Length: 121
Image 1 (cartoon, rainbow, N blue to C red):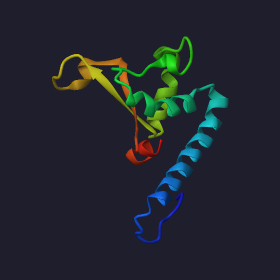
Image 2: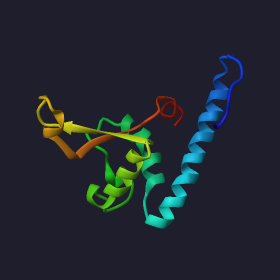
Image 3: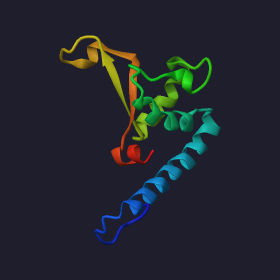
């Protein structure tokens, strides 16, 4: 546990400090894997809030680096998803069940898995 607020103080500054600490710990953890597997986890994580703010229909890879594409960064996205840090939401071509049949894996938005951390970012 990162921190515990003992009483209900409604102190949003305390909550923000805890969120910042969690984000720092995430990034520290990312650094272990980025070096070993040459991933761009921190760059993607830092880009997610700004990407959601834009009216783009998809995650913009060129904001991570020149020449970046889903094919080159697939392992990074899967790592963040599997770690429970991010949730990919794929575009679908037809709103019929099951949705997975009409999803476009290259056309997606990436959300932080925790709304509180998203607002802190």
